[in-house]
View 1 (cartoon, rainbow, N blue to C red):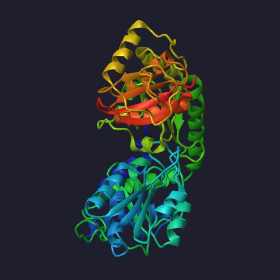
View 2 (view 1 turned 60 degrees about the horizontal axis):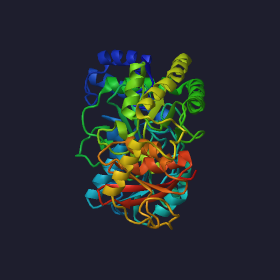
View 3 (view 1 turned 30 degrees about the horizontal axis):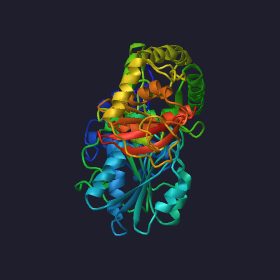
View 4 (view 1 turned 135 degrees about the vertical axis):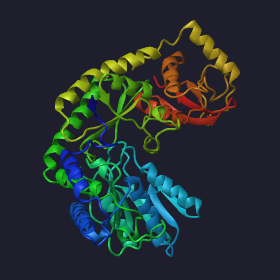
Length: 495
């Protein structure tokens, strides 16, 4: 099995494994105690804290260890807001933050606070002008990830820090995906990271609060970890995490450059060998080890399963692989295709041969999955269509009256009313990628300039139908409520 999901968890670094086993013998005692075993555990904990602080550009007394990266980033946001409650209860977060940040923001809102979710561009990069416009006199904190966990785009942390500093607002940075890969720009006030992302053991998070930043733990009082994180710390795991971070931070530039070259190869070759693919995220300002692409007319769950059978462990941000059946909030905020989504994130030491094997088998896997749908990428069906297709279309038109389009009509077939659709495709109750598959199969049955309405109650269609139009050159004409339920997505055939 080729493991290509380092963004979820990097395999345990060999040095971390050795350090963990050694620390089990030396650092098992309570580091808060003054007897011999406690003092020995404390020395190990202090050494680990100093290592992490050095890598992150912080002071050791600014570093606290948590039970996970999720806990670290949620404490970062809620603790900073609690410490600055006299300033106000408003916070700004980007629309593509990790769900752990967004859940903490939702809790803040539920308790009477206010959250502004600032927009991003099509690469997933925060719009700095929009961010500046979102800042207010009562803004207590801004949260911005250093790099996106789904598409790898690096965020303008330094520029955002300047905007915040000019207004005396602390910048909280979720650096879980970037620590150990790229340096985090200076200027942040609070930082969170996760050890299992850089090759440390799971169950160790890092919370760094710079001196001068007002912070009040939202958790019950405890004297441990500078009163920021309650509970007995896991000294052996923390030692292993620090050793792994020191190992990847020392001499890791060459390996990251090598992985970046492999990712560049994937970004180039996949669109060349697989038709109708959208590679998402910034092509240059990105993490070195991560690439994400989406394949039209492919069910994401089926694609990941087929790749698993072929010996590749990959991940996805697609709605089609989500237990909630809702689109990835990151891909939705970017306005890109969500179906058939694959995230490849290469761990340290990935052999180039495994990437070559992935590139060799992917086209066949996608072609086999598309063959089931009956869609040939880039080829429209004949304008006449089949008798069965025409009957289905006529039935859908008869059963699904449509509201008028806001655009002037162009004499389309159908009801004859201005702006009415020439064809209605009823995909209600069917998950992505079915709405787009049906659209691709039937749009050739209407003349150029005519409207096609796709009825869907799948949230992913709101993202995927416009993205399909962007990729194929057809015109997206907006959406309307459907009397049959769900939403009617209007597409005008351009050629």
